[in-house]
Image (tube, rainbow, N blue to C red; front, side, top):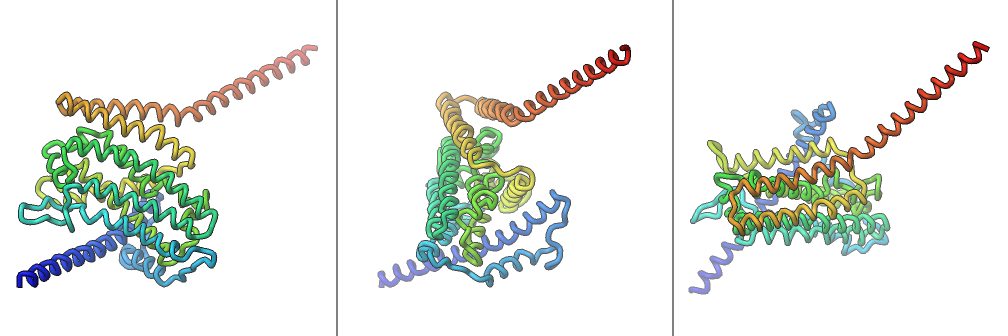
Amino acid sequence: MFASIVLAVSLIEVGWILASLLSLFVVLSVVVLILTWLERKALGRLQRRLGPTRTGPMGLMQPIADALKLVIKEDILPSASDKAIFWVAPVIVVVSAFMIWVTIPASPGSPTSQGLVVKNLELGLFYITAFAVVGILGLVLAGWGSANKYGVLGGLRSAAQLISYEIPVILVVVAVAMLAQSLDLRVIVASQNPVLYVAVLPLGLVIFFIAGLAEVGRTPFDIYHAESEVVGGPFVEYSGAHWAVFFLAEYINTFAIATLASLLFLGGWLGPFLPGVVWLLIKVFALVLVVFWIRGTFPRLRIDQLMAFAWKVMVPLAFYTIVITAVYLFYDWPAWTLTLMSLAGLGVVGYLLYRRVSAPGKRVAVVKARQEQQSAQRRAANRSRGGLASVK
């Protein structure tokens, strides 16, 4: 009898977890549709266009039309490809993007309830960073299994980029965990009452957000599937539903980066008057709009610029974040000291980057001024020779 009760309880728990995972997948799919529509509308406004308007009111049915088109589109399988790897690669990418949401909470919970989360983990941040790395394997396998040299090149570029930018993400996560003394996301959010970590460690938010853009392959870090660079990257041989799966994972990861940035630095669901979930969505979609704004504003980096920025700027800044956080905690200084150290590092690096970026323009201005001076001297010499000739 006791064994039957235990078995029934276990089956109920398994059923509840499966139902929660299915509900989570449906919610994320709807979020992806919303993000694709919102991105088109935002880019349209930035480029003085209207964006989708024809399919449904305000173009709201356009994402559904695009999804149907991709599902019914012919799915081509290259004859020389490794079919098992070719089919498994997109599954690995989307599963790694989906599984990190298992432990991302949307509400604080209570002693009797976990809140809006499938399974809250005390080591939630460790779980998220571990699963996020798995997606790199899917991109490499996608290029390798395609039997296409450009696909292999795109897969290797994606691995180099994602591994490089994973380091600053992990180091910033460690710094936040040091401040909160926990890897539990609910504890981290609770520790930001009344002072948000964006005020204490603004450098951490900048590093996490920029490295997160590179992790999901958003502009200006979309080099590994840039058509002008390496054809279509690791996705060059994919079409139809398989191609759509990769970009489903990209939008899920984009939403995840915005959500994690909100939880780690902006207080997540903390806020007055409105329900916590509403505050979390406001902060997340504000960051998502910043992502879209960056796509419509900045040009794509070259691969050498991208890698140099990771190893010469982002990784040293991330180590600097760890050091100043450790010093702040060890000496028990007031919070404003960590803010000053963070802003000092951000200001110095920003100034050096500005000098580096503006140097070519200054050199062009110097050369142009020299050419204008030489032209003026030649005109003056010609006028003087003309005057002498008229006197003679």
